[in-house]
Length: 402
Image (cartoon, rainbow, N blue to C red):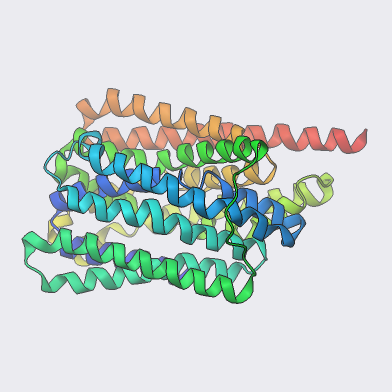
């Protein structure tokens, strides 16, 4: 399933670059990244609450689901109105049509959050392969949507793709519902979330919102900083980097139930698992640096001559790879240790570092300045994240000794 996700993401990027000119792709990526970031809010962290409870008692899934699905729908619709009304001004794409924003918003703020809830349910029931399949299916349908748009005139391609992306998200959500209902008995009678669920869910939601900022914030502001064409060139390179980091995301997804189960165990179990994840993240980060850097001669052939400038950015972005994988691992481990606010704080510091770097460096160094800001942001988050992990593991060790 991991291989399928990587291939699907790579295929979608290649097809999109062939479908859209760099300037159009830059505008799309900016608006889509904003929708992805806002898409972390509708479920208010209920997926993580469901997962944490299911790791202890799988019968709690139906009870958590009772408040998770209506909350996701209500907040998703509320955020859709805000996104459709103000998205153009936040990203700087003032010429973007509201129709495209509505299509993107419905996909990312309503259907995709519901699909993620279904994925969390499967993960909580320790059906990791099924969980990953539910996340992969919308990606596959999205790639098919890109293919269908090649028959459209150039002026209609972005609108057509946004509409088909919405249909792909809807079909992926429907498939997730069918799969989950066959394996898990869900209770559809809605209920209000408790005060404890609100407090814990808000901390998870804030964590997710900030967690997406390091990987999406640069793309949201790229149009303002670099112009639409420059944003398209940079985003294409950055998306390739994200595809190379996918194995670590899959590793964390597979390991999270076990981390949650052993979060209060002695260092003999917990420390060993954390150490293994850290070593794998480091090894893949180093290997990914060389693989990613050697990839740049293929860029014009894969993405088209219009994206030839992207190849020049790849060796610079490759430096980010080990910092990125270790930061991702640190974030997942802190959540499993029950410290979502600590993850929020270290990723918030990274976001502030990124914004400062963009403001100070981009006017002088342009795209290279943006990349340097990203490298510094990832490095700072990696250091702070693993420092907090070390502190928490030591605290658990002392608690076990007492």
